[in-house]
Length: 409
Image 1 (cartoon, rainbow, N blue to C red):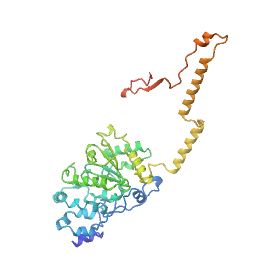
Image 2: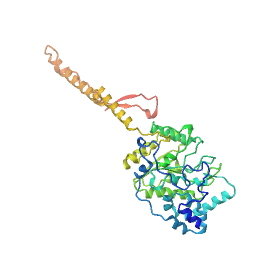
Image 3: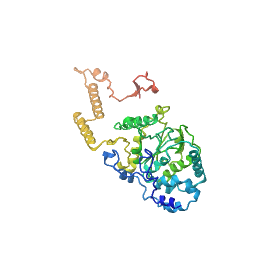
Image 4: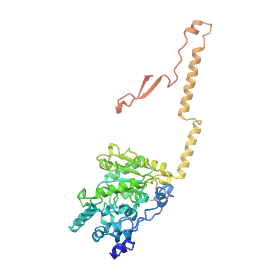
């Protein structure tokens, strides 16, 4: 009991000070320290200021040591991982969920797996890394995954993310393509990397449906209790992050998990999964990364947006210099065009055609031929765009359809 109390108060033992090599990007027990965001809006927005832009106020008061002391010996044993590695901002909200019989049975199952020599991914210290990289009060976006990667040096607690030197899996590479379509300035990580911790540190919660898996056996830990727990996490964000967050649900299973999310309070973006089996059916052009930022900016201002850059020193956003150059170029284009837009020029041309047509119809021939003057008037020429409608022939997707058909109105 005394050992548990000591750890609960943040005084980690010797084993906690020596995490496995490459086991975790951040400190084993602590949340990532706020520092300069990679890129960001002109590279000036810090993780702390960005998080404060979407904060729902002070964190929930929670006496962790007192709570640990109230647990039974069995609970303390089975919940050792949660007590030591689940970030306190999440633990304060999930403490009742993890003491349910169903969750304790899940922990008994995991204990049996490990005691029988089964290799489990991600490493135990990384199961809740999502909570430490993205504390509860910093969540802006939720990206839902399914099963953790089940091969060596892949899963580390963040959905879709893998550690170097592992190359980005196909689904993640397709996410890069969709992101580049939204933000051409996006630069994929070097060496085909797939580490997404910069997103997590900026408020993107990347949560799998199941948080563990047996090595090389997909879905081997499904229907054991993780689904109920992670659904509680989703419901918690939807209920408590009252200022609104963005949920990205890719694929049918993910879509089912956000059915109860209030679409008036939050933004729910659904599409096919980025897997090579489905991405071509709409994922690349879904525009979710840009739509998320447009919605966040409308709610929280520019500081609420997510810089999706993954390479240090880059940003998906234009900096102030680029914005000024774009503005000047637009002004020069307008000056070269006489200050008129294309629509202005077309309207002026139509007006001149109409004036010329009316003049030609009312002028009588020389010699005073009344018949010619009165009975042989030329019919006015319809102004361009008047009397006919130009229909772009998309042919319902038929490439052989005529490009332009005129239909009388």
